[in-house]
Image 1: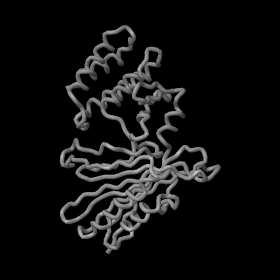
Image 2 (image 1 turned 120 degrees about the horizontal axis):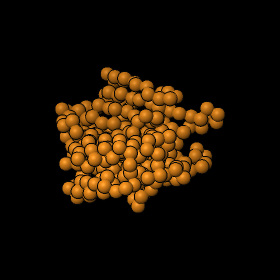
Image 3 (image 1 turned 30 degrees about the vertical axis):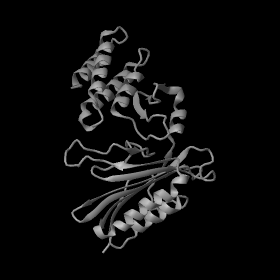
Image 4 (image 1 turned 135 degrees about the vertical axis):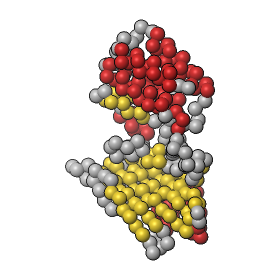
Length: 295
């Protein structure tokens, strides 16, 4: 018997179907998995609308599923659906997260931007899973200003005679829009990564490459470094240094880190501390701790 557990997390909550304006082949394939009588589904839905215009400005539909192994044909049909809708997408990526998920440090590396406050994004590549995601532009009728994009994602793996996976339908602002909207307040570096100072808080916006949804560990740390400036408030620079220290402390969670990355960053922090641009004792101590934490 199909068992459905629904968990709500939203500003404006709604049990909603996958958007009718979504790409038809992927929509149909996702529906087939969700409606399968042998499926166990745990779903969460987030929907936010402008209270004045009733126009949607954020949506996340996430379906965790468990299927018996003999239903792999449903997963294969979903993969085929991505192929059929490729011509309508501006990004399609697939791969496998080779981490087993058995170690505490293993975690997803690919996140889709979400408009939900307080979350870093929606994970795509669960450890040990194959994954695929695609980004599509909505119609001009739905999004006349060209601010948004739809993201569809799926991951899956076979475990103990079952297929465990996740389906995601996500509606959020495009990377280019997020960067252009904050350009006046942003410090940018050559890769296009952006740090935004907003009342002392730190927001990391992803690289400008439209084919990317995330930065590497080195890029994220460099974004923090490049956001620091002598004419910033101490609060801003301390927030950036704290973010950098947090990333360095969690370095083991980023398998792409190289010895060259670490050597480069150690030298940068050493140079920043020994220069005459920064005088705040808390900031200088944070920079020292960043250098020491890179092992």
